[in-house]
Image 1 (cartoon, rainbow, N blue to C red):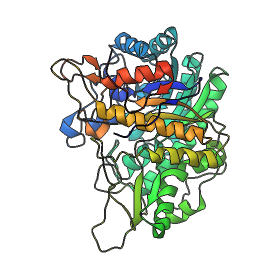
Image 2 (image 1 turned 45 degrees about the vertical axis):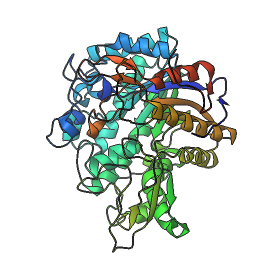
Image 3 (image 1 turned 30 degrees about the vertical axis):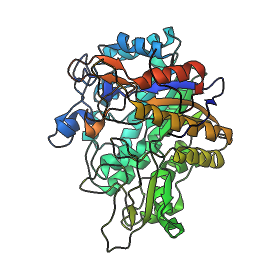
Image 4 (image 1 turned 90 degrees about the vertical axis):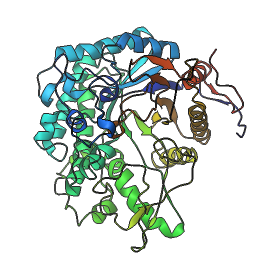
Length: 476
């Protein structure tokens, strides 16, 4: 393993870790919680590996105090969690479920008591099933309901939440949920997927307005995007890069940050939709001032123009479904990249993170950045002594934190980093087989065990320094 020098981060850099409601909470039918699209999807045979569901997940709902204690001992400055929309507003209606709200109030208060900043994501994919039955994100009313939900959360929790994140990875919600169907709700209509893109953008802008009107003035408001760092196999593949960048990145960056959809995206997808769902002033509504842009990064993608005759490669890092998430990109292929790989089959390449952050530095220099997710799944096991020696994860985190430091040194305004994830959890359509956590969760007992990476990350947080590759990652 090559030795790299230790890297010190700015004194006020925010160190955190993250989870999402459906992935950890469990208690799926308790205390008035209504069903979400992920409840329906995971209970549909064949949708999730091994028939796994989030019914129990990590039982975070009942083990809140234990998990708050883990966060406290980690020493993190912030914890990113998501609010389950159907837990606080079952059915997506206007009747507040006080028992559900009380859970998040206890969570927020417990974090503040421990000096940990609450970072709340409003939407991490768990749309109330009743709203999907009424049309879901392809329908405008869902964006309006989302704004009402944001307003209620700003009224009830906005005096204590440090940072609000409106949406997590709307790319996944729109394209994996409505185009390829490998995520909930499992639909495969490309025109609906593009309508979902727009109504997610619109819902974001409306929810920012709602939060500004209800939350504390000092609360920060952000959105989290899983921006794809797209590379071409050669210079001849510039057109393939442009098409994927438009669909993956600028479909959200354009309306949210620049106030308009990119013209080339509209032209690329003209055979699928006429974009008549975009009404006057929608793009201006989507473009609300933000305090931060959340960036989720796991790996880059490599594309080239497809010749139409050879076997088309589809190594985009997402599960293959009966349809493609890449709408109107039939002439583009995703090329398998060299390893090493994580258990998700994603190649490990931290240079893409530096390059992505520098692109954002150049394109949006006034907008501070936050790494809201970064991490890796590996086949972790507890040894006979009860220890989880996840040396590959430690190396992954070290490499990617060094990449963030490189970007900061080059002028990127990166304010914080959240490791994904606090604990092994329900990894969506992959069920429980893929372990992303720095804390190991026994699937039989749900007992928590710190992995070596948790001890390593605790020391990084305590010192604000990423050690060089020769430093041990052993617990005390």
